[in-house]
Image (cartoon, rainbow, N blue to C red; front, top):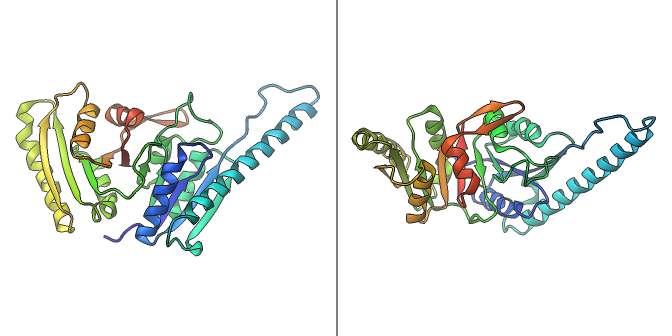
Length: 283
């Protein structure tokens, strides 16, 4: 399988965006890929009419100006970060900006990319709603793998990878989508965590099959299964990642729809809420 030829990264002015911008530039250099930086945001519209409408129009103008300034700052940050990445040619760098919901813009513009890079830090409480993108919403709508990069993540391309295996379509898709990253990795471990000891034999056969598939692609991989010992599956996966000094977790993306957004469920939500590891998800 060839590497990613086009990468789309969500750019914001938040401090936590630095890690994903650096990683996006490094991956673009590694794969000689076209790198698209995307900034997007929307304004807060008045809920009630203000006076004769002149005040509302003034408020909209002010917020529109502030949004344009923020998008311009995001663009400058993108070019500054990418420009410092050795070997990234300007002809392979592109900026796109939109005044609309970021998740909507990212899902649509994903038509031009093999991989989307986002931050996982979105919550209504700790992010700027106007310029933040709900990762689950993007994952559900884009039809592309999403690489979530926390602010404290290691920014070099991953070398030690854990596949959190589950016998689902989403996990199978994630393995396929992560092949370019795995082909350059030092170690790939396929891990299935079982709730019952009696499941381990069948689980071991499954992950061994996945590991052999990866070996056929020239990837040094091994499979293992264990019973859950930690309080949650997410804790068990993080413990395995820590033991193997992993810098990327590959897993299927699972969740449910709620109004305009897609909410991660179970293990996925727990991992992204506090994990210091990059996570590649497919749906």
